[in-house]
Length: 393
Image (cartoon, rainbow, N blue to C red; front, side):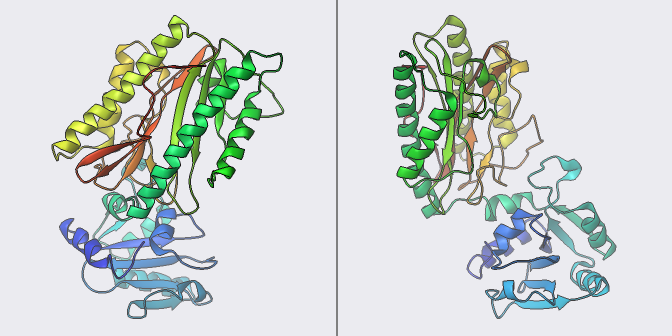
């Protein structure tokens, strides 16, 4: 969030990138990055702009009928209003003319999490005389996606609780699978949700509890409309995510077999586990050496393992997503060179998932997921005790 305390650091980053400033734009929540940076307090129905210059104080531009959301805007920072589109465009031109600026724009739509400013607004800014508009991606990484000390602590607590709940869920499913009334996927989902509430955790939806071939759908969500018992002898995938109030999400996927695993299950599991571990090993080496590494490079490392095992066509999503203080699927760098061209660097303080998967429709699906963040020249994996072998219940 933009504050007087972090303004000097942000302005130094602008100067280091040879930028004259960062122009934030939002309209009815279309740019959650701007919303996260500004933290306006109240309902905003009109277009807003905030200019963060490389030198000097920030300035805000909002509609004349909506002064309320700006009541926490620092008194010594500039703020003006507009009513007509002519006033709006003139004000923007006065700010951007002959300046090299950053906005939430991704060339060619390469990274959709960064591509938040409508094309028409970019055209308006260019028409106002901006000499260049470049992506704010690296600024977003450093000033939106980085975790605070409190955020890291909340994530670690959530990660430990989620691990415990997942293992208890497997034990329950295993016990029930060998009775005349095995638990259904949606019933186990509801049981996990109750455990979240008891532990002081919340989630937006889910979790994903998928048995047998249902696990080949990466975004499967069970439903009481289509009850599916979890039976002895099956593979069971549980993908669960939650956070404390105001905290940072923990997001994990675990795999178990109800009874002894088949040779096919072992083969698929070994591939996804080894892909995950290849990603972790690369990150550990580069972070320990103080080297810079792109999210896309980590995706390549995991994907290479799965392709070498003959399952490349069944690994249909990126290796990992950003987890930022605002969102489970955040605006920071992703581990992705498949769905998007993620070239941003993984910098100290950012967090993300590592979750390769193999999905063979109608047969089997497996994914293993841990989270990671960079801290003090180290890569921290959560949970501390993550899955190495298939869980058998």
